[in-house]
Image 1 (cartoon, rainbow, N blue to C red):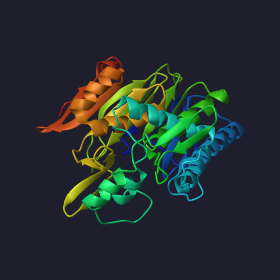
Image 2 (image 1 turned 120 degrees about the horizontal axis):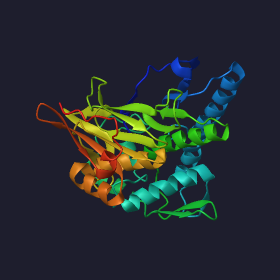
Image 3 (image 1 turned 180 degrees about the vertical axis):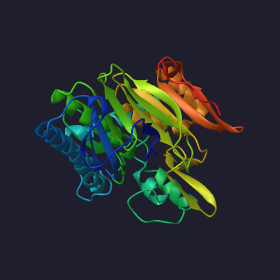
Image 4 (image 1 turned 90 degrees about the horizontal axis):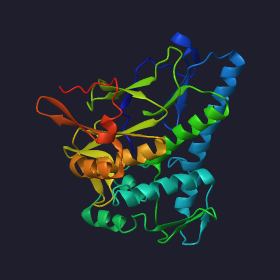
Length: 342
């Protein structure tokens, strides 16, 4: 459900273990319907590179097998077909993603909600091929089965329960961030001390590069046709995620429909050509909050982000260019980054 909004300030390669300048090596490829890149600030022998690449691919395959909405055999798809209110056993990773989603749902006042799966499909952003807009009665009917209240998690028992049997969940707006975290944790377990993980635009960094610098990323300006860096930001053992309506949208009857569904209305958020970036210790949490703040919009979203102590940056179209709105926590992280207002 998220549009990518970050450029790693280096050239990405695909499907290779590539030695780079300053002992930065890269493992890159395709997974989860997008691309991924893992940069390592350490020398890699052929055998070491192969072992790390295999571990990364295994973790990405695990997330796909558990949380994909496009795979009928995924754990999430099986849960969505479970038309019952009996407790349903889930793997620890999927239950953790639901727990993150539930927490952001509650803290955002319902602006983030993974039970909008049927609405995502109805508006043409799911695995189906629907091209027509849903009617008002259909939207109302689908909204009646959304809302995270219809889900009850039991972390101790390892189960989730639908309070309404026809609830359909979509974890797209948090699972990619979770995959970033999972890869990062895998690298730490393998003894890698400095890396930058990027999956479809969501990133997590750790450590220092060989030249003593932090990992630097560029936050994109939300332009549909170009990829232009708006701000450069150094990451210090943290993650960053973005949500925006400027690339992933559909046009129906001359109207642009953003891919982000507002669970409160059951409709796509109004197209604005804007983006929200969130920095957090965990990519999964940043991923979910970026979507929630996009739904809330710059005014309400900024207020909620300040209340929650979130490092958030809104980039909005303005008169003759773009304007930014940063929370106090984000401004504290700027360091060498420079806001560009033009």
